[in-house]
Length: 359
Image (tube, rainbow, N blue to C red; front, side):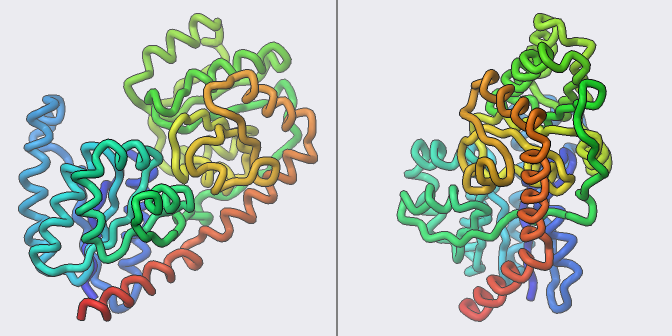
């Protein structure tokens, strides 16, 4: 069976790119499968073209369309990693249209917490294409409910977490000297890193020796650095930049609490990876996060843009070590269900079903 996997790959190490790379590696190890990758974020050649907004879209799009046409002719199944916004129009839409021309089955593996807003605004263009898919797969029940609102049938296949890489270190009880909080989201407005910084400022009043590490890059960096300066936290907050996977593991293993302040989300890998490393999680309760982790069971959830409530949740973990230990253990049990040997067979079964249906 010939499978064409279409999607972004690292760098950067975003959640969707890492899922694509991880799935590619696992599928290529399967006997009887021939898997070709078509990356939608191939490097710009020459690199300076990537700095010209309109030009860079066409420079990347034209080769992609040509490669897509050639690759789909060789494929039995197209596994399309898709999300909202321009990425849908530039990369997912052409794949569905070309696959229809060739009569090739397409699995739309839809991701991203902005699906509701995107479908509402763009339904006229997006829904007809989605209905052409042989299957629509989401990683969360949250997105499944969103699609059900548009009478689209979906199946949930969860994200895969590499627990061989993301695993716990030994945890000691937190104290002023050891308290380390981390944020591991891109520095973009929808992830609202400012709320995490303000939360940390409140914690500083009771835990003055604590520190905050912010891993990621993005357009909000300067504004966030200015906020840190205004709050006089520049000696306690560190922007560590974009980290590779091993560096991310090391960061989690030296962390006590992971903060996720996002305002829009689906099934963030960053939370699951933190849980896999045995880190207590305090997150907002937006999008698919309440479907992914239960409040008071796997982590603590608070409303978005509420730094005071986020700080209160952190203090609860610090003042109740038994609760923190229980959350960590439950988190480890949760990610155990997302290992490759649990999730990959679901993809293989779907491939076989579609292959028979389109034989």
